[in-house]
Amino acid sequence: MNSISSDVQKKGILYMLTASFCFALTGACARWLRDDINPIELVLFRNIIGVIFILYSIRLSPVKQKGGKPWLLIFRGVIGTLALYSFFYGISKIGLAIAITYQQSYPVFLALFAAYFLGEKLIGREWVAIVTGFVGICLIFLPSVDTSLLTVKHHTIGLSNALMTGMAYLSIRGLSEIYDQRSIILSFMLSGIILPVISLFIGQLIEPGHFDFIINTFDVPRLEHYPVILLLGLAALVGQIYLTKAFSYQKTGIIAAVGYSNIVFSIIFGTLLGDAFPDLLRITGIFLIIICGVLISFSPQKLKKLIRR
Image 1 (tube, helix red, strand yellow):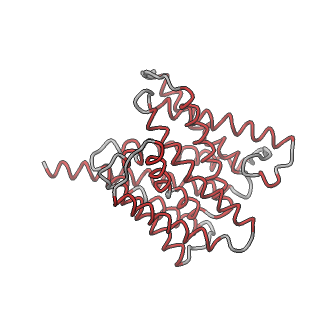
Image 2 (cartoon, helix red, strand yellow):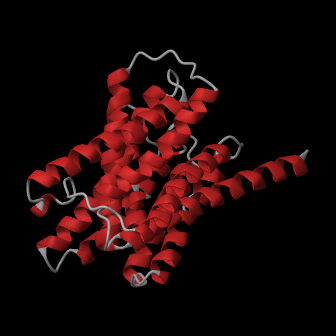
Image 3 (cartoon, one colour):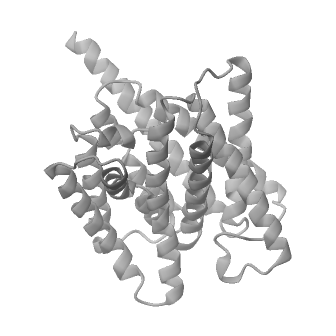
């Protein structure tokens, strides 16, 4: 019996490692393309590729759901898309490892949102996790923004990804019991097509300037870009599939903790692609953010259920 349980746990961990690798690969593709394709275009291409597979899945097996919260569904799509805007923008400006580390600090904001909006009482371990994660964020953020206002902008937008990711995950809490998971993903992907189209259209009419993180011009990719764009979309889709598979197993605390291997993969990819290896201060910040996530992953409270969605 213990052998079966161990095999199941190993499979869950392997699935999560696969998902983490795929998400880091998605970021690596964005890092590779950053000099030629702007972040808003990357959001558009990522979701066009994904939505094709989701619609095909729904065609094979129609959704079965109660529904009833369309505005919350729309909010999840919009906030998730804006989080992607800031994620790809962060990769283009502050590097792959730091952008993904900021993203992975979302448990700090998720814990605070859950306490404030849902009235969930946080236990001591969760407060320790929040403080630890916040210190980790400061160790990365503060030394990086002391040179120019432009750097402050880049890191602030990169960090905002964590805040919006926390809001998106919190909204899923109110959707998962009444909507098919594919409907929730579809709302995100459709928003991830509509909003970039609007942003790119506006970018054709006015100069983006300081608002290049939300509006930009559309540049037709060159032929050599298309394989990388396709890999970006497929890696994101496969990552989502294996993330779902991983959390279908028991020991979700262990599985969620393994998910932080995403940061390790991103450091490797970023270094190979020319990003500077994080210095000691940033490595310490990264380590503290990982500790924060692990502490919450093993929390006995409801909060850990939000993190695995």
